Amino acid sequence: MNMSDLNTTLNRLYDTAVPDRNDIVSLLSISDADELKQLFTFADHVRKQHVGDGVLLRGIVEFSNFCGNNCAYCGLKKDNTTINRYRLSVDEILQSIGQIYSSSIRTVVLQSGEEHSIDAEWMAKLLKKIKSRFDIAVTLSVGERSYEDYELWRKAGADRYLLKIETTDKQLYNSLHPDMSFEKRIDCLRTIKQLGYQSGTGCIVGLKGQTIETLANDIMFFAAEQFDMLGIGPFIPHQDTPLKDDDPGELDMILKTLAVTRIVTKDTHMPATTAIGSLNSGDERLKALQCGANVMMPNYTPQPYKKDYEIYPGKRCIDEPSGACANCMEQMAQSIGRYIDYSRGDSLKTSSATTIQ
Ligand code: SF4
Image 1 (cartoon, rainbow, N blue to C red):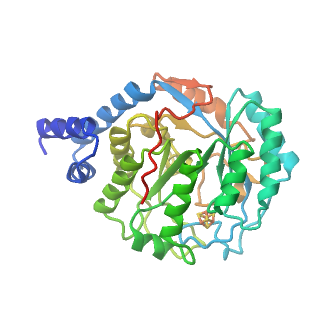
Image 2 (image 1 turned 180 degrees about the horizontal axis):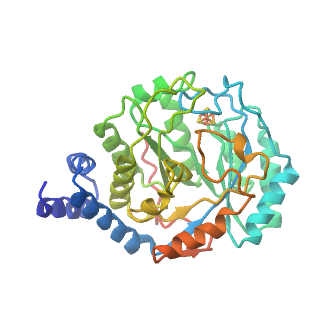
C-alpha cells in the first residue's frame, strides 16, 4: 500500500460507522516501518481526540488464583499442580483497596481465576463493604457466572465487569477452552451488558491457528458491540500448559490490533496491558500508550502472592511491593507528554449496544 492509499484507508475506517472488514485486514497486514508509523500515529490522534491525554489508573487486586477451568494457555488452569494456590481474606482485600484509595486511584479491579466455589453472597457482602467504605468504582473480573449472580453483584454495587472473549473464532475458542462453550461466553457478555455493567472484553493476539482474518473478526465484533473497555494482550507461552512450545505473540501484530481497535471504537478505554509490558525486557507498554491505549493497571495484590498469579510467565514487577507500579506509571506517562488521570474513568460511551446475538 502506498502512503496515500494508507491515508485513504485510515480515514475511511475512522469515518464509517460500520467498518469494512477488508480495510481492517489490509491494516493488520502492514509490515513496512513507515506504514506502521503512520498507522500508529493515526491511532494516537484518535486516542487524543476521543479520550484525551490522561492515562487512567485501575488498581488491580488478584484476590484468588484458584480456578475451575483448564484454558490451554493459562498457568492458573485447574490441572496445573505446580503453583501455590491462595485466596485473600476479606480483610486483606479491603486493606489492598485502602492502599489503592490512599494512592488517589478511584477504580479497583477485583480479579480471580474462575473459582466456581466463590459464594455469590460472599462477593455481594464484600461489594457492599467496599462501597460503604470507599468512594471507588469496582470492576469485577471473575469469569462466567449465572444471571442471578451477575444481578446480585450489580445490585450490591459492582460497576463494571471484564470478561474477555479471547477470540471470536468459535472453533479456536472451543479448542482452547475444554468444558467451556463459545455460546455461554457470548451469553454471559450479553447478560453483563443487559444488567447495566460497564462492560469489557478483549482478545489474545498470537494464538496458534489465529489468522489476520480472525483478528479482523475480533475487531469487527468490538466495533459492533461498542464495549466500554477493551483489553488486547499477547499470547505468552506458559511452561506448565499444553501450549508451552508455541511462539509468543508478535509485538507489531499486538500494536496493530490495538491501533485499529482504537480507530474503529474511538472512545473505548483500552489498557496498555501488563502482558504487553512483560513481552520482552524493554517495557512495551509505552508503545501501546502511543498507538491507542489510555489505561494502566498498577498491581496492588499484596506480597507474597503476586508471583503466584502467573497466567503467563515473566510477568513484570512481581517482586515489587504492592502498589509500587503507580509511581513508575506517573513517570512513564510524563516521559511521553501525558499525565495520570486520577478520576474514576467511567465509560465515555453514550449508549451501550446490546446487540449481541
Ligand atoms: S484464563 Fe481464567 S478461566 Fe481460564 S484457566 Fe486461566 S484463570 Fe482460569
